[in-house]
Length: 440
Image 1 (cartoon, one colour):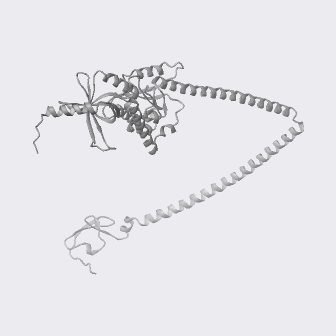
Image 2 (cartoon, helix red, strand yellow; image 1 turned 180 degrees about the vertical axis):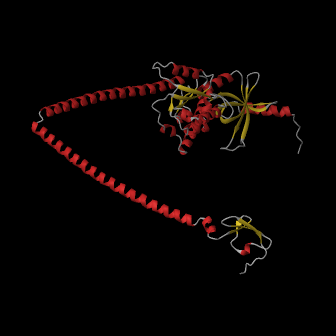
Image 3 (tube, helix red, strand yellow; image 1 turned 30 degrees about the vertical axis):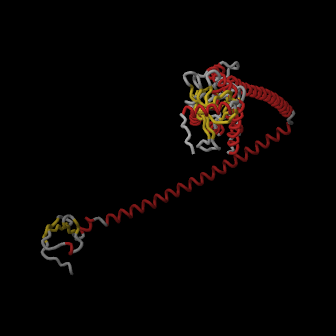
């Protein structure tokens, strides 16, 4: 077999380029995921496209692509205005591409068009998947089940402090034509970009820690590029809002479509101004109800007072008529009854007075008898004390023997050599024990 002449790398690449240009001169529509993006200094957008199966991490296909600087701004603007989110890595896109091959850079795709409606449908599908998951978990409609308080005066605001919509909203509440007072506080959060989800959830956590201070939560932002709304399309944010214990009102300025956050909120309104109008309207409705109740109470009170006055006047007239026509006979009967009752009372008083006098005499005699008995008892005790007096015992010829100041009652309590003191009726004797006869 004859040996083939070797080709240079450039010759081989040129051959491949020619084959590609001849056999793949048309454009093709492909579905792919944007893996990486970077913008060159010349305005070209370089993209890495990949294809994965389901949730697999490893791609099954990969290709470099570029959007040339002359059409990139137009394609990007159209995509973001249509889809409402930035043209970025991580998106599933439908592209029109023309395959190319370069002797230096190899195989790549030149992107000539982006089908924004495909990505819009993909976003709607993702939103539906998130909402379906929330429904399966039983939380999608929890906010709708909350009741708005009659007075929506204490408002926790989640927004960016620098957002024009926040300032307009506060001014709208402060200068409302009805003069209602609103108490509000800002819980700052990012309203666009990658931090939107994280900062709004953090603000909700802070509000939950002082939940008793607030009637409602509003999430608002002003106008801006529709590409800024992707942060409101996440499961974690929707889940946190859906399960929040206070009603949440949204007014994030998305005029054309609803975000997943709008779907799970208690009440969705288009703009911060619409949220302000809603709050003022709710207060107006409550004020109207209170005014009607006040009118009804005043009317009912007036009617009741008039009815009671009429009843009182009627009773007064009847009583006056009754007493004017009260017969003399009846009056005499009453006088007799009164005298009879007075006599009965007087008899009772006299009878009780007699009983009290008898009881007083009985008590006096009883006390005198008791005193006499106690006096005799005291005299008897006095006589016994005198008989038991130690001095009288000593005068009868008895004596008291002490050892070290203590009375000796048994011979075993002393021993030879002990010093004893004997007390007599008249004087005392000091002696020393010579012998102890304790066994006698």
